[in-house]
Length: 139
Image 1 (tube, one colour):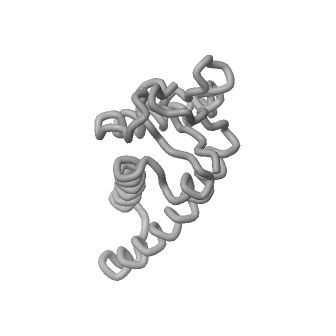
Image 2: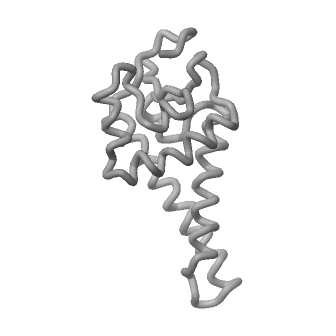
């Protein structure tokens, strides 16, 4: 648990709600990207290049938000923040590791996310791998 913070690790419900909010924001960003993509590349608004661009856009969104303030817009709405084990904003290395391992957490039928109910520290697999916590900030 973060040493310099009195905040409690967040449960899965709040995390999923924040992910839903962020998903709507990302959907809007993807629509704008596709609207720009269409005139440039014609009717082929699909394929591995576009998928790569949308994936990079998503990763950049999370990385920028987590490094800048420790929270995305959805996390802010649900009063959540990503912090390092020292209670400060995560480093770029922690963010990169967190993003990479989040795919594994979700890809194993969500087992990495459900781990927060099994583990003693209420961390997901990507929290553990990156030495971070997602904490709930009370009002």
